[in-house]
Image (cartoon, rainbow, N blue to C red; front, side, top):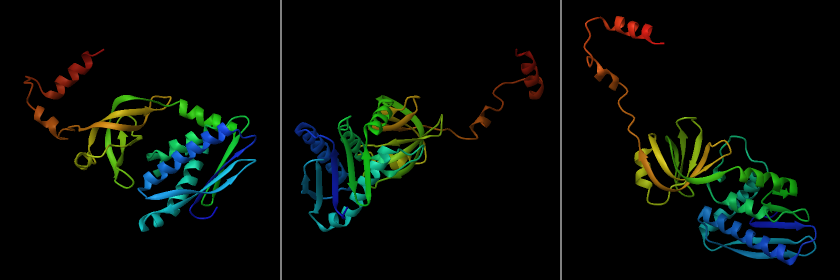
Length: 255
């Protein structure tokens, strides 16, 4: 596939309704791609084949900056398709932080027993069969999202392609992808490296482990206290016997 082109193909007997639905989802995927790169592009139809219906679109830049971004945009499509078909096991990836992956997954939902879909961009070609689609839907069904709060340490703050950060949950030390809204930049600079409570729409996997937090409404730093604060308790209890004897007596008396 030449640079700047993105193509999808529906194999099998393709109905007009099926093709229309696939085109709508394909358009949403291309829109999400432009938004993720903040690129001003216009997608132009350059190929439309019948039989095994194939649609090819080309990114036309509207300014010089967009022209430079087009190769990376097309590479992202290929990488997103690969991540959907074969998700990484416990690894992070920049594309996991944005909506592009969701739009690609939605495009694969047109696959059924009569049709499979192939997505092609840059040097990548990924085919989604009914069995792959079933696996994708099963993984997606295992996640649930609800309003909640997760406590962890704020790390890996990034402003590239939108503000985001990783929150390492205190209980498991596993990373949780967080997508704060605009306007929280000052707050995030203040809590970077600190323990904080992050409140928003928390998506969890089947085990209950938080995966990501979106629509964040609050990021509240948690006071971790003074590491030597325990020393202030010296002399709080007055004893007539040495402290080591008191501790031994309490220990021996406990069941």
